[in-house]
Each structure stands twice: as structure tokens, then as C-alpha cells.
Amino acid sequence: MHVQEWLETVPPLSIYLLVGVVIGLESLGIPLPGEIILVSSALLASQHGDIDPFVLGACATAGAIIGDSIGYAIGRKGGRPLLAKLGRRFPKHFSESNIAVAERSFDRWGMWAVFFGRFIALLRIFAGPLAGVLQMPYWRFLTANVLGGILWAGGTTAVIYYVGVVAEAWLKRFSWLGLVLAVLIGVTSMLVIKRKAKKAAEKVESTKDELVPAAE
Image (cartoon, rainbow, N blue to C red; front, side, top):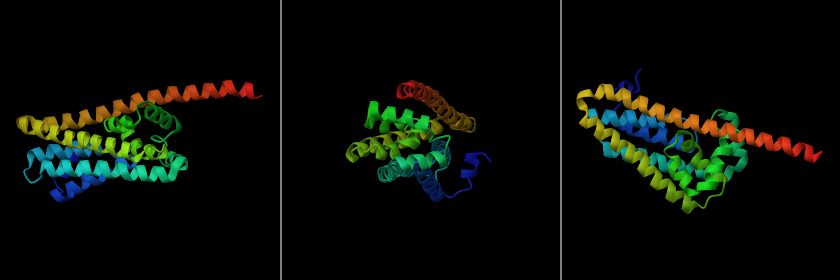
């Protein structure tokens, strides 16, 4: 069943909770389609007056900020063993090469990696736990987390909602386009990161090969 069609069968209160929980869990470090759920819900809100876009945006923002904060706390407590455990649980997302790319992003951009990570599917999952593992000062993490959460969750809700209202005549077609666009953005982001991750892994392997003869 189409995501938006399914959401039409769910009461407004449940949609608010669903958006907040799914985005929160995604930000916590669990791979879930938070962006697709948010886009679908915002489009639905533009068609039905029962769903308040302000409440929807607030729930999405709260889920993003709270989920990332919990992920940070878990990462800070769990450390490197946590990443290894996540790698076994979610090998496609928390592979060593993906973690290496994320770490380089944090080394280069610091707190801005948390902020901009909101707009990249894979980094959105990494940001909280990895910031904790890397012992990023909490005030820096919180600043980037709050600003990124508001801009991504609140901004996405507002843009999709108002575009949906303006384009009501062709909304059904747009709903598909909106979902397809969200998926394409997510897939493209992941492909770019995977490509960088592959290069990083190859670089690590070549470095190991160079060190082995030297050690012998």
C-alpha cells in the first residue's frame, strides 16, 4: 500500500506520534525511513485540515533533537564497542568503511558535521552516536543538533506542506513525485557516501599492506 494512503487510515494523533517516534529512532541510530514518513505526512496535512502542520513539524523536530541526544548519550557511554556491535547488527550502514568516512567528516567539520548530517541519509543515522563516541563537547553537539533538527524537520514540513497547498490541483501526482524525490535524494546521498567509504577502505588496506613488510 502507498505510504500516504496508509497514513490516511491513521488518526491525526497517531500520525504525530508516528512521525516523532520514527524520526527519533532514526536519529538514535536505527535505520528507518524517517524522511519518507515526514514527506508523506506533510503532504497529507496539506490535503486534510485535521492534521496541523505546526504540530506535525514540532513533533518531527522534537523527535530529531531528542533522538540525536539519546544517540549521543548512548555513544558516549558505549564507545567503540558500541560501533562494533552496531556494525554486526546493521552491517550495510555501520560498516568499518562507512564509519571511517563519518569520522573523517567529524574531524574536518566538527559540530557542523552534526548540523549538515541532518540532510544526508546515512550521516543522519551516524551523527548522534558517533558524536558521543568521539567525545564531542555536549554544548557543541546540542547547538548543532537543535539548529539542524529545526531546519531539517521543521523546514521540510513547511516546504512540503505549502507546496502541497499551492499545487492542490495536481497533488496526487505531486505526492508521488515528492516521495520519489525523497527516495532519490536519500539513495544519491548513500551512493556518494558509499563511494567515499570504498575509497577510504582501499586506502586503509593499502596502508596496511605497506606497513606489513616494514614490520617484518
